[in-house]
Length: 372
Image (cartoon, rainbow, N blue to C red; front, side, top):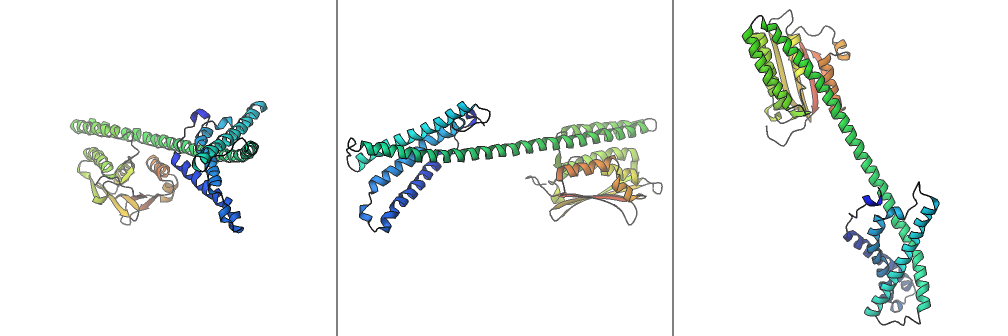
């Protein structure tokens, strides 16, 4: 952060309050010796008080300028020794100017508020007081500079954290987009294969399927930039997808929905259920059955949204292998869940006791502000 990037944004109220507190502290400090010597009447409140207030309240005017020109008052890496020496000299000048002006303010206020002072006869004392005050002002200046340098490094650290977070977010979005883009051609390829398989058998059904596919693709493009959608929106897409599959399989495909109506506005990853439904259809039509029944369940369990897709097919011959080497659909689902929720999700593959294969996933339950 250079001088041109610095703008005073702290507010003068805090500065005035700090100057008041510091003035009161040093005023009390100057009063302590009189307390121990039991000579309260000898303490000159006007002289001590005005001098301290003038000294510290004048910093209120200088501190914003110091912050704005901090680079000219600190040792800079990469600058020549002579240039840095000039920075130190400028700090000495600032301290001397502060001491001179604050002492002049003290003299003026003292003569106005307390009593006139013979400045000529006290000139030597005034010069010594200004020089002594310059030493004190220099130490205070270094303290102020140190605080601002620490604040500057803190700001840079915070800005770096924000940049890292934004970079990680952009990378995460890019990965999620890549996963979703991987899914869309896979889904489209399968849908077109279904259309091609019907062209010679039933041209009308093939035409109807293309119409449904066009509607589905428009919906897909509408949600193209969304990584999360509501459960209602995801189910709307699934129903459109199943309309296409129903044309292909006629009355041999049925789907049972068991959805908690209160979860309609819960957020889920976009297109997270389609690969699971596609796998259920693929495995549901096994040689042992001519009818595929799919069950889709969504319920709340504690702070999680749990979704389960099961079929009535022959199950899985090697469940352990599938868990460790899943296909494109399941692998894509797992990667997207890991990318979005890190360790706050689970994905479980299982076989139904009555036959068939099932997938259950749990994600954090996050609802939009809209009622389902």
